[in-house]
Length: 151
Image (cartoon, rainbow, N blue to C red; front, side, top):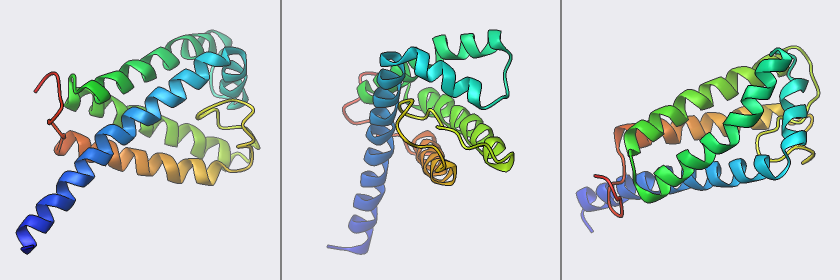
């Protein structure tokens, strides 16, 4: 196998992992937040960043947005825009979690499911979201268009 073919194969695998990995992340996290809306709302409140009204808006809108992004990435609809929105949301998540960590809050990040025992692992949550951000940037630049409903 030549170096060029091997390089293209690695490139394609990274694009596949970025697209379908992020789709899975969004579908699982959105579903788990919708399955426990009160717990998710409490996780948002624990960050001490938002007014009660904004907490309510985030709690109601974020889970369906995550599921829609997951479906877009899975089905190959609006790949670049979905990846761009993913990157923007990940930056917001990283900023929020970093803020909580800097302020010494020991909270459940609310990333996937509330009450999941993630309290105290905000550093891991930040690292994980940085990885997801890198995957989103990769998907923006090099979207895997095979198996896509919308090229």
